[in-house]
Length: 132
Image (tube, rainbow, N blue to C red; front, side, top):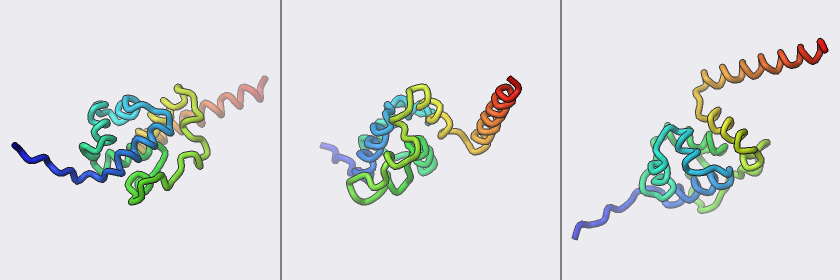
């Protein structure tokens, strides 16, 4: 009988990842889609079968609105709290969540483009209101 491979994956990591995702009101499919990976790949991270690369982990914690320490910490509890953020994901509509998820997955250049466009739209709206 072949020996089972011993996992070196931190058992707390997957549980924390799932806790943050659930608190945000997101599905595995939504997170995987924002990361441009298969849902089954993301599921393996939550179940402790595998771990994401450090780059991908950075994108995951960004999408979930947390940080590396909260996900990778030693204690089996949530040390950082999503509830403390200014606008937690669970208070957003699904459409707003989709926008936030997408924004968090963008590069800095893409984020700047979007921020510039939003500023342009708001300034245009303000000008129209002032001229009315």
